[in-house]
Length: 245
Image 1: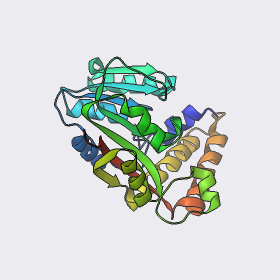
Image 2: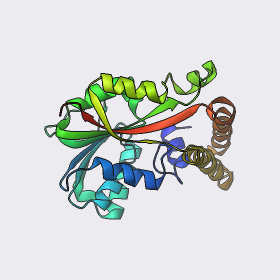
Image 3: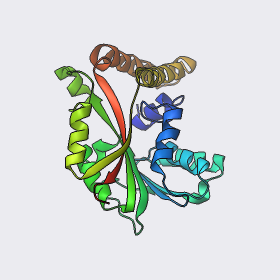
Image 4: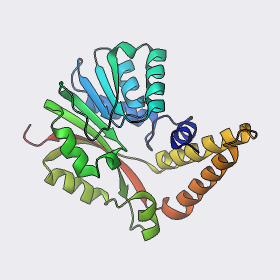
C-alpha cells in the first residue's frame, strides 16, 4: 500500500502530522510570527497545514512550502484554495535538505521532519542560512520522557530527553524563546486518530483492494504504540532564535 495514501487516510481527522492540538498550533504560530508581513518557509511541509493556518490568521504573511510528495503538495494547494490564501503560498517539490531560495525568511518551520536532514542539529544547521536577521525557527522533535527500550528506539529513532535536547540546541548557538511539550492528551489523541482514521476507512471500504492492508497497518501501529512506546515517547516544539541575533 502506498505510504502517501496511508498518511493521507491516517491524518484525515488530525491534519497536523504531529501530536499537537489546534490550540497549541495557533499559540506556537503566534509566538513565532513576529511581524505582520513575515515570510514563512516550511521544510517538509506535507499537506501544508501549518502554513495555511498561518496564512488564514495573518493576512500580511506569505509562505513557501517544500516537500517531495506530489500528493501532499496537491492537497496543500487545494486546502489553500479552499481557504482563499493560495495567492500567498508557493509550493516547491524539492528535497527539503537541499532547498535554497533567493529570499530569506522570518520564520522557518520544520515540525517532525528532522529525519529529512539526518537529525535535529543538522536540521538547525540547514535552516540557519535561510533565516533573515532576527528570524525564528519553529522545530518539532521527538523526545524520550523515560528510558526507552531498544525496541522503542528501533521503532522511532534515537532521541534524547527534554533537558538534553534543549542543552544540545543551546550549545549549537540557538536560544529557545518559547516551547511546548505535548500533553498526554495530545499524544494519545494523535495516535488514536492515526490508527482510528485508517481503520475506519478500511471498514467503510471493505471491497477496496487496499482495505485489508490498511486495517492490518492500523492494528500493527496501534500495537507498537500501546506496547512499545506510549509510556516513554514525548514531543517538543521549540521556538528558537540565533544566539546573539
